[in-house]
Each structure stands twice: as C-alpha cells, then as structure tokens.
Picture 1: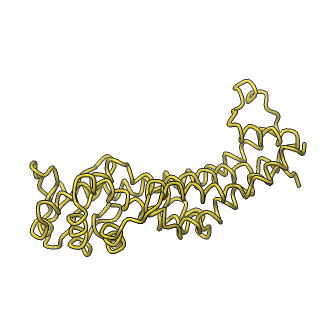
Picture 2: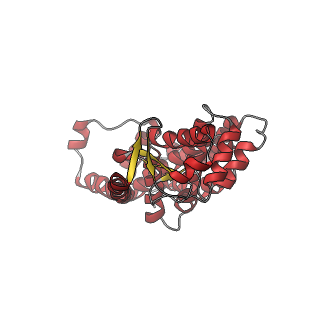
Picture 3: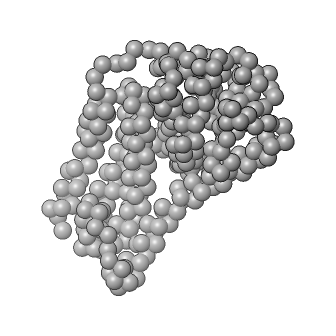
Length: 302
C-alpha cells in the first residue's frame, strides 16, 4: 500500500472518531461555545478533505502522491497549467476526490433546500394568520401557548405568540428577541444544515452522530451569549423558563425548547475560573499531534 495514504487516513480517524468524543465531554466547549463550534467546523472540513484524499492517494503513483501530501500541508495549490497537463491517472484521482466531496456537499444542499421549503410554507401561513407589530419588529401570532421563534434565511422574521406577550415582562421579551435575532444575524441555519447533512450521510460516524445533536446546542448557547450583551442573565433565564414548553415549527429556532433547562443552568450558574479558550486549543493540539508521526514518515520517505 502507498504509505502516503497514512496522513489523510490518520487525519480522518482523529477528526471523525477521536475529537468528537473529546468535544462532547469538554466543559470548555460550553464555556466558550463559539470556540466549540469553530472546532466542530474545522473537524468537519478536515474530515471531508482527508477522506477525499484517500482514493486519490491510492490511485496516484508514489512520487505524485508525495507531492499531493506536500501541497496539502503547505496549502500550495497547483497552477492552471499543471492542472491542464495532468495525466489520465491524475485526472482519475482528482475525479475520485471530487466524487467523495460531492457526497456531503449534496447532502448540505439538500438540507438547505428542505429547510427553506419548510420555512417558506410557514412564512406564507404567517402572512395569512399573523400580524406585524412595528414597535417590536416582530410577527404576532394568536396562540395562547407562549412561544418566541425565528425563521432565518430569505423569509427571516421573529415570531411571538400572544401567549408569550402575556407571560413575559418587557425585559424578558427583549432578552428572547435578542436571542432570536442572534440566530438570524449569525446565519446559524447554515451550520444546522451542515450538521444535518453529515448526520444523514455518515450516520454511524461519531463526528456526524454526536455533532448532529451538539452543534444545535452550541448554537443556542452562542445566541444566549449574544443576548446577554443586551440583557441580564435573570431576564434571559426567566424567559427561557416561560418558553420551555412553547411550540415552534420545524426548521425554526425557538428561544425555549428541550435545551432550555441546560442553558438556564449555564446562564445562572457560576462562571468557571480559568481560560476555556486556552484549554480548548491545548486539547485540540494534543489530539492533532497524533498524526505527526504519519506526516513525518511521508516527509522522510519518498
């Protein structure tokens, strides 16, 4: 077997199997959810890139595959002239890599399209049964159940039920609205679609299975942190409590929901001492160092 297949194989194993188990247990990921999300994104991108390199390395001769490892490590892309002069074997390897990348890419597009259709249908319904409140900048829906949610994307809007207007104070409502607007401003639906695509394409892979449920939770915590810049922790936690049992349509972000209890404990609990960012980066660096021997082997052996 071509030994140059070992670095992408090692990287795929680390990002697809090892790091997800570390991330789901890491306290720092919930202390710094934006960093946790960044690590999940990097893991997904590196797993896709490394799995795409595997068939290419198996198809290429040893000398060419060594250059491929060098280009990947140095991010030195081939020139257009080099691409046009590629041999049939190199072209086949490139097509194999693109075919592997097309699998999660197609799943991502499918998830986006499916979510957009669901949100468009609900937006059309809101035009019929909802009314716009210019003072709050939201769509008000006549429903006794307390709910605050948003529809991101092209049909973006924040929806508040009449039940929520009755039970939430002015400060609590402002906190819930800030949370939902953080989802819209951060384009969080794109990350949800990416996590959903991985979960549907790589069902048994820890990166996909664990990330499919962890990424949405970290997105909610990220929106909580953004809302806390404008409101108090008591106001946000009380709003989450009041909206915990609220109903939201499929593919919408709700201020309450099943994660409300975990997020309330995080908001009201004491902030842990230490530097979660530094601890997180150190943990990722230690895990990534597992593939250094494989990279060294490829660098020293032609």
